[in-house]
Length: 219
Image 1 (cartoon, rainbow, N blue to C red):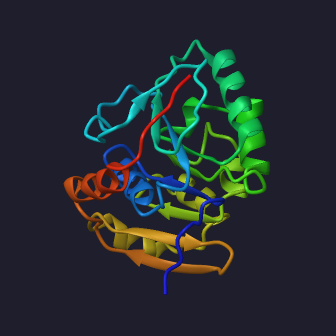
Image 2: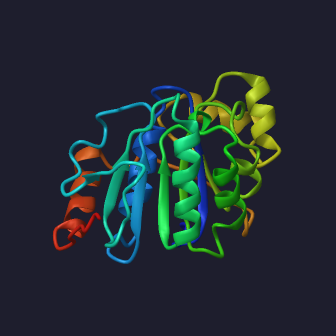
Image 3: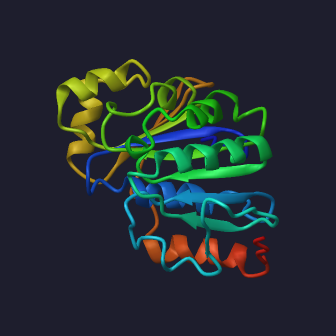
């Protein structure tokens, strides 16, 4: 039986542009219990991928989250200091998940590092995506309890990933033939080949059904 992250664990999703990693991240969000925990999406790319989530609430660096639900913030590259302060407040508050569409845009901000290292105790689960295993915090790999890995062509990147997830050459060859991915449970040392996930509409419907009775209170 495949285990999925609970509401304190971290998953890192790796894959090149167009591989389906954001789609997979949204699916992981959809299978969480969204009524018991608030989630913040860090949309550093300004993507419209999340526009179809009903009741999603845009926030800014000064917002204080009082109710469970899904929130989205769109920091600009030059706002690293403000983002770090915001993430530090998330760490202080706890009981809040982080969805990071591109971990490389967060870099190694001190508050982000703190969340990755101490988030389990403070109930801060993380769903984070990256195109490559470079230009991203090392803690995104060392602290993750789960990985989902899509095809990456660069053999150097494949080798780097193999230090964190036991994939062999034949595994990469399988992924190259379709939109399959490998899912690795670090704690149980279990690798599973994942078939293509449900389509975006199905995933969004699952999220929206969970949120239909939730309300938001932003101060």
